[in-house]
Length: 260
Image 1: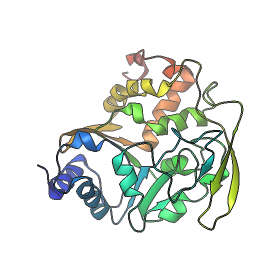
Image 2: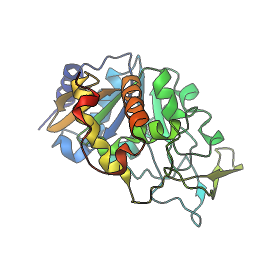
Image 3: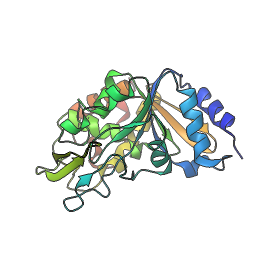
Image 4: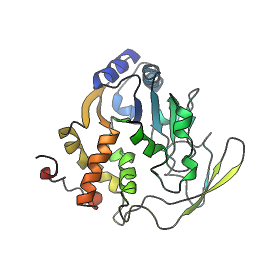
């Protein structure tokens, strides 16, 4: 059984710094048995990252739709795992108001980081929380899950104006603010004619590792990949300029694109 100290040791070994901006995609199950469970995992990250900014996605895209169309950031559950739901209920954690792709954050400039998501009509707008990861030089940790969970790459495709990635029409969604005001937020959704192309995002792991953009390690039993967000976006953008439909299938990235 792992302890909180074991989790912290894994964080340090991966090269995460206390002052970093860190977003975590997570699978609690992959970590294995931990003393005091998921709370110990969160305690380890929150305490270690107290000088930085710690972020978890708290997405609601699986449930929010044309009929169930009011997003209440105070109570709407996340659809992306146990750790995300526990984290957003912790004291001093701030959740953004994006109706489908919100994030929750604690630490340095958490309020400034999360504010304004309600102003955009796309899932991962360049000016929103996902785009701000680029300016902040953030790190993204895949904790027991693969790069298929890489929401940031949805953003990179969006910022590069790749066709057929977003619906043409808007869902008529609303946001219920903490003061009880309803905000209309028409929202485009992720779309591709062939289905969920994020299942092909893991083809980027090999070039990321080759370029030193990603690093592998373990926290508990969970195999982890730690990525540099800015470098990840820059390399992926360069590939998308060669082939905008890079992620339309699972074909490996040609090695000559990154091995010179």
